[in-house]
Image 1 (cartoon, rainbow, N blue to C red):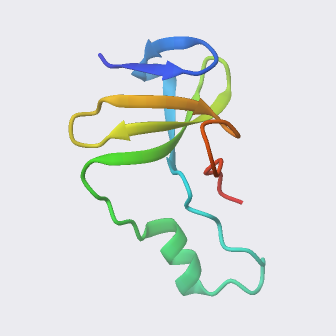
Image 2: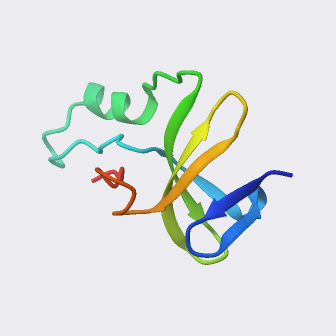
Length: 94
């Protein structure tokens, strides 16, 4: 079992969390103006790079959403930030 650091509740079992996607993957704007290609790119096209990743997670126990910096190779968590903290963009899809 891996422990993830909820910025609100502290370290918890990974089974309490839900993956929300890559931080910074912004939803295309304009309901009718978005092309099928732009929508497909938003949903499916990922670099899937090895190493450091910024991800959005939800802690299902408290319902809070946060950004976590995690290594995709060894799964080590560097830091977890409440959205709007931790420097720069909150990473939420708009």
